[in-house]
Image 1: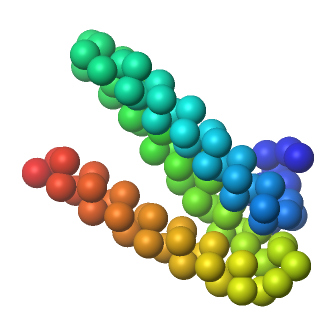
Image 2 (image 1 turned 45 degrees about the vertical axis):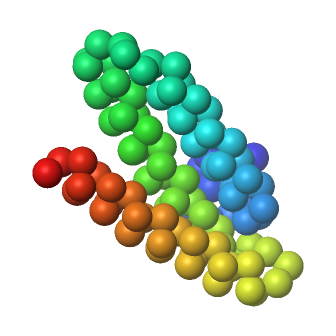
Length: 96
């Protein structure tokens, strides 16, 4: 399992999907731990989190059909689509 295999869409979907969720959960826990931290630290964490989220979403999209059944690919791409729309909506709402 290498990051380049994720990026190229060569890794199995199950590995990319669940590993991405674990990675994003770690960033969420760090964010919770930084509650009340200086604004600069939170800004840096948010910037890194957005980049990691984008990489994970792209990787899931790329690897979507590397599963035993094609339905998992369609479900993964649907989840990524809704996740990105939701994330962009939250970012725009927070910016206003």
